[in-house]
Amino acid sequence: MKKLFMFLTLLISASAYAGDFTVSVPSAKSGMFTNAQVLNGFGCSGGNVSPEIIWQNPPEGTKSFALTIYDPDAPTGSGWWHWVITDIPADVLRIESGSVPKGALESATDFGKPGYGGPCPPEGTNHRYIVTVTALKTGKLGLSPFAGGAMAGFMINMNAIAKASAIIRYGR
Image 1: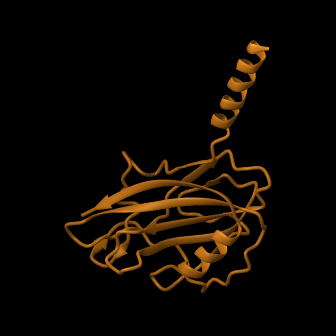
Image 2 (image 1 turned 90 degrees about the horizontal axis):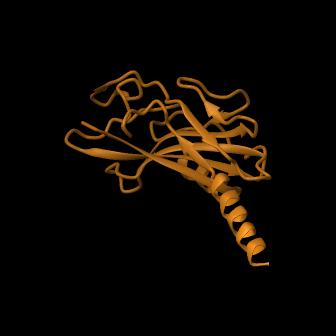
């Protein structure tokens, strides 16, 4: 009985570990965005190409995903939304650099329009960019391309099953 208990404990522990919902950003080098991902504007001269983002082990029951990139260090009093994508199909586990999955919806960011806007913190500062993939219990959130980060965040949080995040930095 003792051996069975130990075996089951190890099995449950291994299953929980193997099933962690994770996200990674292979385009970032040593945890930093590269010039390819940096904004071309606001005094920055990057490529403004969205990074490759990969996630693994989404929870059972996931109907779609949302992806956000958010800068909590922006000197706005409320941070800065750099990218908001919803309605990512449940079978998609990767977004290639410079692309958006078929069927997904990009919503407006704090740049005032839908689409990726790269990092460009004020000179002399180093900011954190939180890349979050959220597994959702619904296939479509019903957002408009002009819904801002706050509205998208509300709808994402109301339909979330699980979240996975990575923090990437950029400074100048």
